[in-house]
Image 1 (cartoon, rainbow, N blue to C red):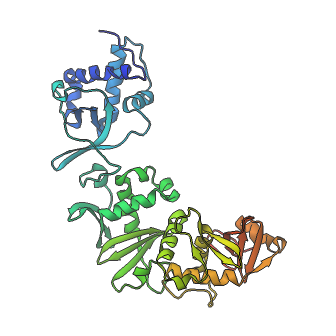
Image 2 (cartoon, rainbow, N blue to C red):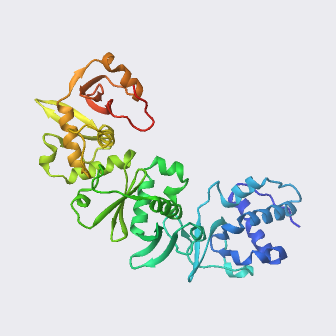
Image 3 (cartoon, rainbow, N blue to C red):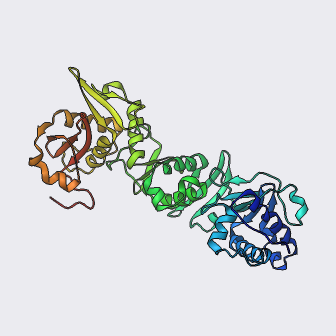
Length: 393
């Protein structure tokens, strides 16, 4: 047998064609035949037999190279699939689907290898969702079906089915791209609609109904609607109408800042008073300008205020139920504009407890605002409100 030298080059990968040719005569491979497809871009391998194919290649390579190419399983896998985390793909044949990975190789005529072949396009699970995806079969309380406007996920929540349409699943993927929490909790979520669907189904199943008397920031059109309902799981808010999740929000981090900014952009001008909104700025929400003196508000400062105000027990501050971003900003603006300068030393304990830095500070009651050297309100602290995990000072 001619010796084969495998290198990380196009020439080295040509050995894969010889490996694919060898599979026709491999009797052990009969049990895998229905789970591979020769395609113009190489060899598609179902994820359920990927490790077995790696082992077959290792054994074949050892013989073909006369014992010279003795690679570890991990290095072989990385070389075959060209990376640690290869793209997960679909082969869709009618109502059936295979999910797996591509071993790239130059294939001139897929039909000539005596193996199952596929001449259609491989679909990426990053942007395409198939209801027969095997990874979704074992998700508790989840069923997928083809709906009028795409795939629909049906989630069982306390004996009731909630429908999540495909556009809501895709909007959740957009949320995941800006969510550190989701990326840590569900690795790969920002690159996979399947992982998105799995995690979204779990969150929707655990969500609890939010009564209108509970203080939480909501979209303006939800507060004014007579038919829309809310449920929440942790920091995730689900807008539901007639058993269908029509919108998903993450009330945390950049996703919260983006939501608040969008809502303020739709608010009536009088709700903002003298404040000027900067709709296209990455970090700044907007600014006040009085007698030529400008004070900017960082989006984080307002997001922190929103989180704190709904936990306050002060009757004059708290909301009695659902509130909008515009209503929240009215309170923020009023409290900030009535605040007074205060020396750092007088509030050092509160600043240390919350890890707050700033060039100067203003205070109003229990509220402290940290201001940077360029006159931007960067942080908001409420020393009279205790968040989970914070001890009393």
